Amino acid sequence: MSVSEDREDVAPAVQPAAAAAPVADPGPLGLAAFALTTFLLSAFNARWMSGNSAGTAFLGYAFAYGGIAQLLAGMWEFRNRNVFGALGFSSWGAFWIGLFVWIRTAPAATGHDLAWILVAWAIFNFYMMVFSTQVNLAVFGVFLTLELTLIFLAIGNFTSSPGWTQFGGYIGLLTALVAWYTSAAGLANGLNGKIRLPVGKPLI
Image 1 (spheres, rainbow, N blue to C red):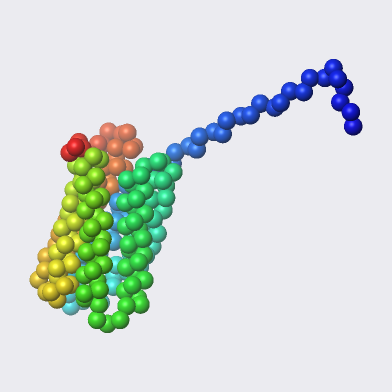
Image 2: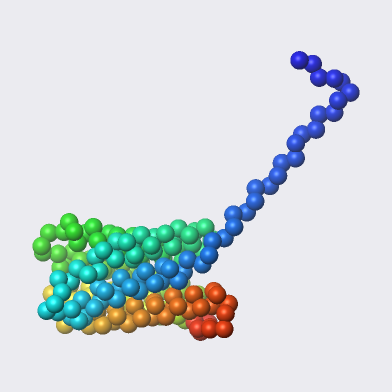
């Protein structure tokens, strides 16, 4: 097949790829999932369920809500190019899934094993807490109370002390409330309606 010499070959214009549209803010979902699961586990640690509970009320929600829903929130934060939210939600979503699997498969004597798990997560949470000072006061409050929760629960499991574990449970309940507030603030402020909830300025 020949091409006529008087025909000009014109290369087709290359259209730049359209930038991916951002998704809705997944932060309120991730925080709500974290808050509810933390509340249920902390209520057991604080002995609010003593005498009328097997202490497993949180397990299903640890997997489905605290785990899967929070992991999805983290993936959507990657889409939004929010590295802090992506790392935080993905990691804590995986924590709840891992805790669910570990409790289902762990042997009877697990106190020190759980303590070391809590120490490892306290290390991760510590640098997340440090960098949360650049987000806002509410988010910093979540990581601060969570850090204290992890420390006291680790001490309780290392020492086999119900008192330390119970105190860690109370701090965990506070963590859940702070996370719920931060989730509600993200929802309210994202709606741009009349109801606005303050989250405070970054500390740094």
